[in-house]
Length: 319
Image (tube, rainbow, N blue to C red; front, side, top):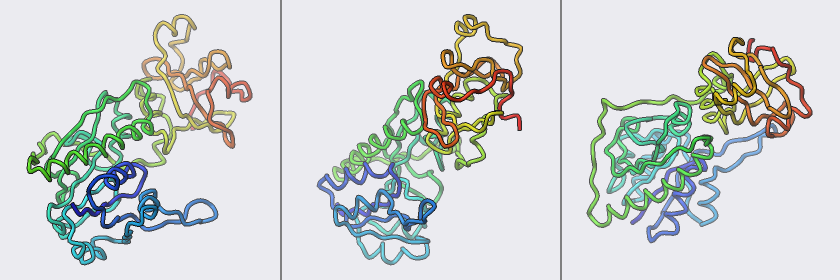
């Protein structure tokens, strides 16, 4: 089949790779416009564009696809459009510009977690399972008919970035499976139950400040869910630190270390290279296990505390 692929970040790369290595014909790739990155403003191509150019595939980029892309996309006469984290909303005209419409690779088990950052929010909310949904896109946000779903277990201490890397591979496999069903005439389209739908919002930098008035599990999940972006932070007397990983302190360890249950939320109760950094939360304690000092490297917190002193008794993120 003749396919036009829409995608931009790393999440979309395995799907495009699978399509290129399959018997299908990727006749064009649509990706977001090139943007300057970093202090020097160097223009960097998206991961999808880099892969397309490597394979000599035509690349299309639109500032506003709904305004600029309709005629050109229609003229490609594609059998199906495939989207995976493209980054712009497609109009009804574009959704109908190919023979079989648009197949979308989405990083959740729809109808839960429609919208932006579904993988991160599944981790932040402490879900045990997430997955991939292949759907036929409609004009609403991730509300089209479902073609197939594949559940994926979220591992106990998995960051959003690690889960992201696993799901993008599963997404590629599922998309090929959906296209095979389309070719074989065995495909079915199942409407979503909109009453069960949840919508997740975009991540913002302001979310990175840890609120220790929450439970230890909520703090841990936030830390893991905001890794690799925007990364949680703590403000201490000694400076600002980024927090990449955290663990709930189990009751046995609380008893062994004789931790003070009467400490204030956000209070540092343990800080040493041997025992790490432990902070009081609403229901117990959380250990911040991987951190980064300003202008430093990411490292296990116990190693960081060999060179950086963080005083016990202070309240983190008080200001």
